Length: 114
Length: 114
Image 1 (cartoon, rainbow over the protein chains, first blue to last red):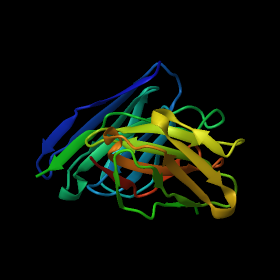
Image 2: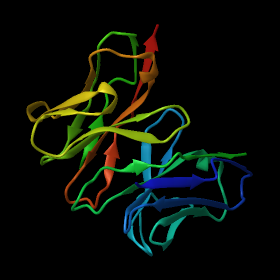
Image 3: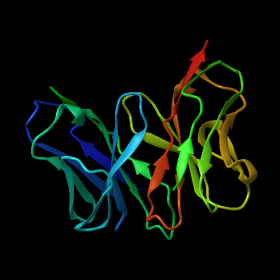
Image 4: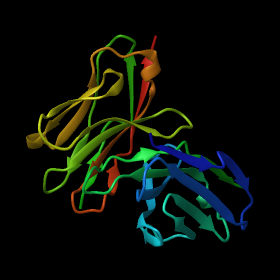
């Protein structure tokens, strides 16, 4: 069966510090991968998605970036965090679009920028 | 452009009562439709999905949803709510030509009274 992991689970970082959040998927190959941010009391905002290694699409201009160095690894980064980057970050995967569209989510990372 | 509207931000029901959460979407063709549930501090769990065929779909935890094309709706129902159903519920829509991306509604928070 497929599983998705995210770490760290929680993170407190000062403004201006770098960020690296990691997401890995097991039990599947060539998944589509997604990064979402969920601000308090709000819905999900798609940040990035990837259909393959090195292929990243950005949905929202911001100071975050994403990379996919391996088939089942997706990394969210920032060189300098802003207060507005605080939130709950969720990674998700789905199968190839021709097979299904449902996305499966990881447990999330709670980021607090102080 | 696709959009999803969940008109109710917060709903409170008594334990054992029936539940209906509303979801309206905007899309030019038949979309893929999903309902997810999120407990506090956790990731999203897929409850059910509609791709095609029977417009009444059954999901996990006793939930069902009905796709009504004429009303552009995909409402979630449960005949008898349990205290453990208290959570945030998200409706999402996907398009066949959007590379697997989903658009999420803003969510409905469900509280259950004993």
